[in-house]
Amino acid sequence: MEIRLLNDKELADVYDRHLKPAFPAAELRPLHAMEDMVRRGIYRTYGLVDGEEILGEAFLWDCAPGWKLFDYLCVAPEHRNGGLGAALIGELVKAERGCVIFGESEAPEYAPDPDMARRRLDFYARCGARQAGYLAAVFGVPYRALYLAEGEIDETEMMAVHESAYRSRLPADLFQRFIRIPWDPSMGMPEKHPWEE
Image (cartoon, rainbow, N blue to C red; front, side, top):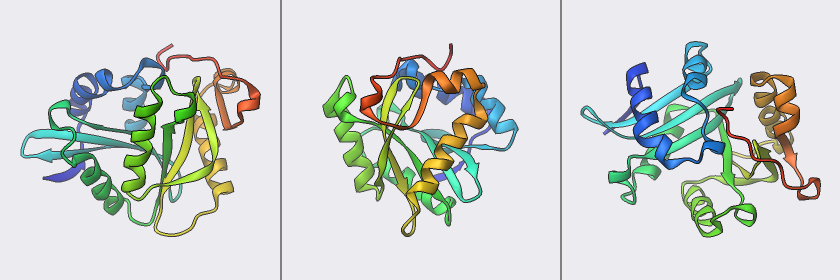
């Protein structure tokens, strides 16, 4: 097994076979947006491969020097629960050594399936991820902010990079309506809105 960048055809294939069945529409970036970001050199699509078979994938968004947003992690359905997700994260951290990899995981207290959201957080914690001290709401989904780093980080800087990443990628009206970083529950539950729309 090895980790390597996926080509365009492989990306389209795993998007349809792995990501679409695994993520709700409100949480899945459109393929054309991923492809555009890859072309612009700001998005990395890693695959964990065994020969020709892609066992899982992890996608990173280059947000700022030294900061990568962990956009998606997915293991092929037939290979789940065998430790490949943790192996993929471990390889990803090695491939991106020296960078802070940060991301979002659904906040259990607001999730439709709180147990599943807790299991995801536990999984990331076992992989070395730490929770930041803020919540984010992205297209109506409340998330806990997490990060993988070699040492301590400035969470205020992380929050600013996190917010700036979405601000730089989305039209101003969509950003204003659907992105809250940080998000406080007193702001009310954000409206759900699928990425594709």
